[in-house]
Image 1 (cartoon, rainbow, N blue to C red):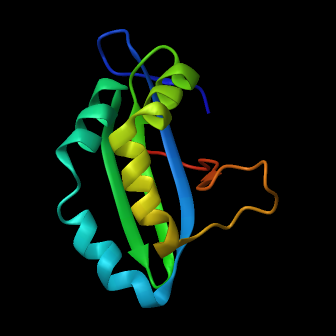
Image 2 (tube, rainbow, N blue to C red):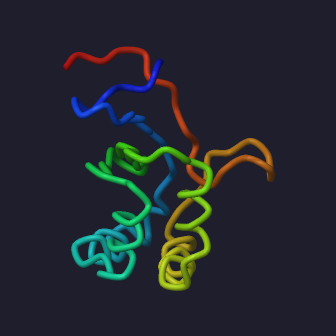
Length: 118
């Protein structure tokens, strides 16, 4: 799908991903996500991530966000390099189960968009 325009000439990239949730950690995962650290949220915003949501269906997590910047790879690297985000990920990782099929694939599996209606 081609990037969208936000109405002001800026591109919008919609990103959807899936990940497993370790059942015995579900309560902790949900508790932590009711109070995501402000530093993590600030880094996401500074990296042009908006409209970020995570949904749960059983032991499956589905995330969606919109990227409104011009250098996706650089902004994702900025997030990955942030010390608070790294600590957050270290806390979350044992509660998650990746669906990737190989070690070189991302932790969250990005899924393609097949339909969208504005």
